[in-house]
Length: 172
Image (cartoon, rainbow, N blue to C red; front, side, top):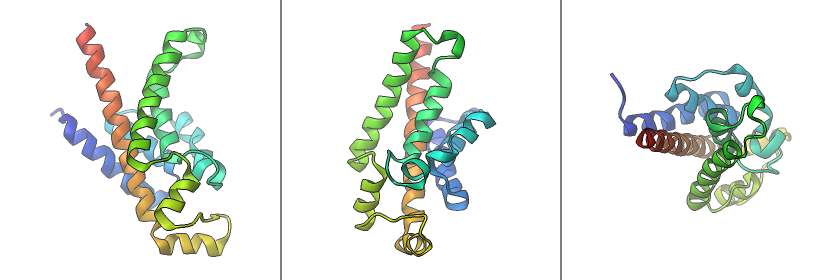
């Protein structure tokens, strides 16, 4: 039986939150949630998402890794193949969808930068390479907060992808 849109969105949130709580790696957790809900699998893109966690390379100096994962899912489904490298319409389409995700994220969280999110949530930025800081981050509730962000981004991403699917069906 086909799931309703609401069931898909709820599943995206639940998978994203669960994956982040269990495995960490916000971009991979977001991507896995979106892929699971949509019935997709690609280990290459999943593996490529690894180093985008906590900004980039666990530095906090970049946009939220969950946002990276959602953006990768959008590009995976609506981006250009190498054979279409010169297709500017595909470039524009994927980027407009990614901008929609970014805009929704900013509307909810006020920023896209990982370090700014940590400061907003915890009043400070944690250096996850420092074992004492990592422990302090966990004690402050980072795992719960970040897993909620991952779930939110997975849900936002699936919503945008479903909107695009609906628009394509209406054009036919």
